Length: 297
Length: 276
Image (cartoon, rainbow over all chains, first blue to last red; front, side, top):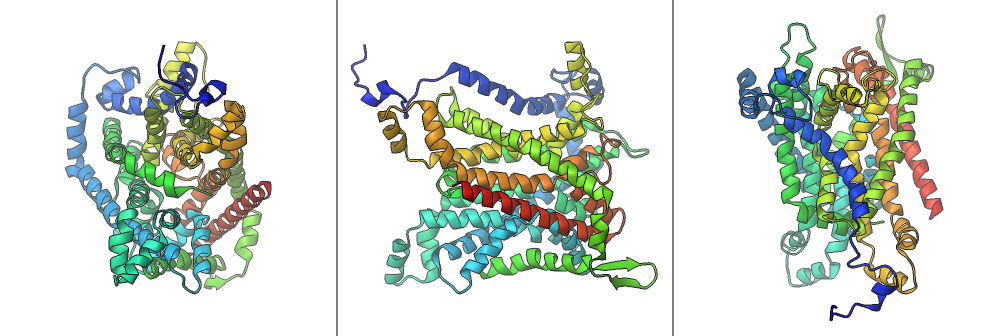
């Protein structure tokens, strides 16, 4: 018998803080887990196979040879290290595109949340309205406009459109409103701090989880971007990973093209690992950011 | 604010303006670029390929989005109930596919669907039945629906879950003291509190469905006969521009889809507000 007294609430109905674990519910949710992991498991197993084994052995079990290291080596060196080049391109698009987008979202979100200026409501309405504008309506005209400006087929054509994230702005605005008390800013101003110093020393530290959240979503959007680079870039040396992967895959279908499914699969695995690692290592921050600022009514 | 708005004007407002401008012109063999008023729009309204594509994404929207959002909602409630063994593991696992690029997701599922790599074939042999080819013309929309669901269940689950986390726990305690059971707490407190998040998730899903492009465009290599050049409106606009050089007509398709998307999103939002 436990000596600890349990609160009366627990006996009557629903114990909120520490309910009994349910095996049945865990089992049902386990099915969802299988669904989630099945393709990832397939990807991992397949990347350990030679091209011959890919076609001849069962998809969810290992082949005759464990070829993972050979596949990785071949992926990294195929076509003079094309994959490495694409990887570095992607990294550049993420750093400049996603990085810039976070900077702009933070500044604009802070500005919207903490300052009054004429036309503020109009600005807000237009930006939020822009969330609903489908990329379709933008992509083709953006391409034509960039073509006129001579920006297509340069990295700028991918970086510049990545700089704007209406969703990032929205998250940052919500987060600033909740996490940064206006009184604190006023206290700093009374103490004689400049606007910039107030922002940097008072507001910025409080915005940490919000910034991590916005940054992760911006990184995913840029890392996974497909449509925009697809239409903007012709020259394979500027491709990001997504376009490169599809080009490798399409190679098998072209006349005289070499089928390199083992490389497509291994490259896919190498493409998703950095993002998954980022999400896992930062999960404490971005989940807190999402819960405290993001999607309240 | 300034820097955001100037870049915003450059990458959002200017292309929209340019797109409208383009849609009012036609490139004719004789006479070159000519102002034609709304003639591109009347042509579009009578274009069977556009309407077939539109019907396809509308069907996709009506079937796939409710399935996906229901799964997300159930997952969020299960995880929020704290009754799972390994709650944190479930939460991060189900979200994980969101980090996988659409290209990789479509390639993985595409290979698994395909007869060359044998997963669906193996399953057919194992069950002793013939499963319809997932890459066949009749089934491929379902196959695409499965890929999109796989990618976004976790993302929507997280939106719902973060919203559930903002409910003060004192509410549950009060309800429990009043004798409310778990089911009653879900229907009377949790679901109503999710209204805002549901609205956001629905609108994002509508936009996503109408924009459907990545998955069909990547599967096109694996299923060249099932996916036409006008499979979705977005794919149609893309092919018009880049294979057909019909920039003016392509801009018209883009604008009409943009208008329809905004109208539908707006109607859904209105309905959501009225229910509140």
